[in-house]
Every structure is written in C-alpha cells, then in structure tokens.
Image 1 (cartoon, rainbow over the protein chains, first blue to last red):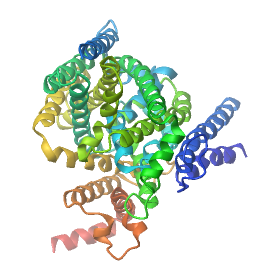
Image 2: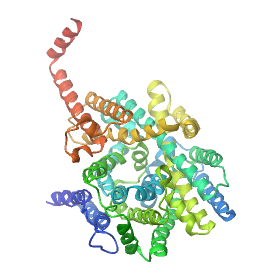
Image 3: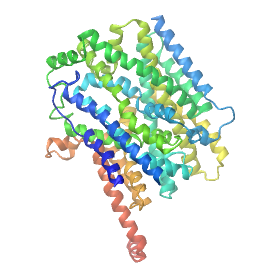
Length: 63
Length: 494
C-alpha cells in the first residue's frame, strides 16, 4: 500500500514537468501564467519528492 | 575598472587556496581522490550536485537564451532533471558501493560483465567531456574579458585558470572541487538574486511591469510558438536533458561520493527549489532585451554583462565576473577529474590489463594536465568543429540511459551485446544527424509540425532502444539454441 503511494507521489511531478500552460494572462505573483506554472512546479516537485523521500525512509526503517 | 580586476584576481586566489587546502594530509588513494572515500555529507553533496548543473552554460546561456528565445527558455529549469536522479541514483549508489565502482564505465562493465562495453562507455564519456570542458573555457574567456573591461587578456586568463585547476585537482581531487564549489554557490546565489530583482525594479519598477512592457513591445514573445520552439520541442528537449543529465560521467561520478543513498534522494528532492534561481536569470535576460535590444547571434550570450555594465559601478561588475569565473572553474575541475580517472582506469587499464592499482592511481594524476592541455588546444584552435562536437555530446551521453535503466531491473532483459549495439547505433545516428544538420522534418517532411519539432536526440534514443532489444533477443535465442548458431555459422562459411 505504502509502496504504491510512494510511486504515485514520486511520479506526479513528471506530469507537472511536462505540462505547459501557454498563456500570459492572468499574472500570478507578478509572473505571466506560463512562467508561473513552470516555477510553481519546481516548488511542487520538491514538495512531492520530499514526502516520497519521507515515506521511503520510514519504510526502510520499519524493515 | 581597477576595482573589478582586483576583485577578479582576489576571488581567483581564494578559490585556488581553498582548492589546495582541501588536500588531505597523506597521499590519497584513488578512491579518496575520485569519490572522496564515499563519505560526503548532505551539504557538500548539495553543492556538488548543484555545481555540475549551474555551469557557465546557465550563467551566460540562461540570460542569453531568455534574450534570444523568450518564453520557451523555461526549459532550463524543468524539474524532470531531478525526478530522474531521485529514482535512479540510490540504486546506482548502492551497487557502486558494494562493488567498489569509481566511474560510470566501471558500473557498466560490472553490471553487464563486459570489459569491452566498459571501454565503449568510457570512450563515449571522454569524447563528450572534452568539448564540455572547452565550452567552460570559452565561457571563461568571455567572462574575464567582459568583467575586466578588456584589461586582462582572455587567453592568458584561460591559461592561468587551467593551470590553477590542474594543480588543485591533481593535489586534492574531488575535495578541491567540493571546497571551491561552496564558495561558488554562495557567490552565484547572491549575484543572481541581486541582479534578478534589482534590474527589473530599477528599469521598470517591478517584475510584473517588466513582463508587461516586454509583452507590449513583443507580443507572443513570452509564449511557445506553433512552430520551432513549440510545445512538442519543449517536451522532447526536457526529456532528453532530464534523462541525459546524470549520464554525464562527471555527474554520475560525483553522486558516488555521497555518504549514503538517503543524502542523494534528499538532495534530488531539494534541488528543484534551488532551480528557482534560474527564474531570476530569466528576469535578467528579459530586462537586458528591453534595455539593450540590439545584440545579435553569439553576442546575445553577453546580455548579462552588457546590462550589468550599463547599470553598475565596475566593482559590482567585478563581483559578477568573479562568480562567473567560479561557475566555469568548478565544473572544469569535476570534468578534469572524471575524464582522467576514466582515461587511466577504464581506457589505459583495458588496453594494458597488467597495470597495478598503484600505477593507475599515479597515472590518473598524470592524465589531469594532459586532458587540460588538449582542452586548451581546442579552446584556441578548435573553431566550429568543437561546437558541432558539443551539440553531439549532449545526445551522446543520452544514449547511455537505456542500458543503464535496464541494468537496474531485477531481471535485466538486455545483455551486453544488445547494450553495446544500441549505444553504437545511437551514437552513429547522433553523429550523422548533427553533421548533416538534419531535423525530424528532414526525415519526415510530411509529418505534422509537432513531430517535426521534436528534439533529434529522441530519434536516436528510439533507434538505440529498438536495436538494443532486438539484438538482446536475437543473441539470447542464439545462446539458448546452439543449433541456430551452427546454421548461421554454416551460412557464413558458405
């Protein structure tokens, strides 16, 4: 169960990395949407990978 | 002007001192020299992993690319580059530690139990790394001549830089790279964040107004066009970069110096955040485009320095140049270290198997100045050919990805014959395509635009994979049924 969760969480960022929102409006935090989307996924990738990392650590400890 | 030169020389001396000082007291064994005895903690691993990615290519090319390409430049901070290492580095590290692997070539030759495959991987690696060193040195030339306002001869600066790196790599090995990498990252972070925030505010009153001015002046420039740098170009480029990044032998090698696999995973998870720095490089490039709109061709790579010189006092330009020098020298040191280790351990030893480990250790340090001289030669006399080689290099290393990934599976479906054939086919495709400057459109003129814009590295990768599996399957069947083998031998003799 945890193993499946690890795979899902660890691979969600791939989806983020390969989506492009090809629009300028609206601006979010001063960035055109296309730049904001790419930047947001940098943060989200870190979040997802950190959670995945935490789960992997816990799984290895329990072994 | 003098203040800029003073800062440049001062930073260079500090870096040199740090590089030398990192030397461990005693004569280092090769394992200590090349991968730090596999004992690097999180912070050093972080700057090493970041260090290989934030090279002069990003420093000059990132701002220049924003200037030239507009919106599609967002490819430089795609997070896929770190999702791949998050998954593949821990198993690689585990295997490497268990089998005392020092280089990428070792890894292939142990995993596939094939010395010739190791040699092939070593050659692909060295052929790719030398143009990459040359790229750093060419970048160094630009940085020094711009930041010193032409007062320091760029050729002389490159020679001095190469000598310094050669000395500290020979003496300190990866410890030297790690120490200078820390200084480099601090300086680079300060410089980029400062420029990326200050410049848009200074000229346009903010980041949003800067983008709005740009959008008004050049409508569509911030978007991905329907042709050329289109969405399919973007995705295929991100795939080739993401898969290829850790196939660079110096990136692969540096990750082996980690203390444990957790550190690698943790760093791969944090590094996307660090890539936000690159977003600020975009701001610099875009502001430069609005302020100094007439740079053409290769001069667009000067965008960062042109706008800095138009805005700041010489001492600030000096600090930027100092950060730039380090972004060239640190990757250079990693590249020198890795290529000389591969040359001695994987190429020389493959040709002369009776060489002892002690001799290999000594020989590796002898190769450092030799590789440095070769790179220096190409920097001065390489001309266009070296640029063609560099474009190929990115796609060359990418060809190592499929056999590497397969080797991580529990039951590897690929054998050494398949892996070798795939790599060779991929490399030949890349070379042919680059030399004839073909694109996907050349091969498929009738195909929809989205196919035509695909990165050509993808085509080579697909050919590689198909050949790899085909040859693996055929040789597997042949080995299982000696009958067929006899028949084919029979045919050959007939």
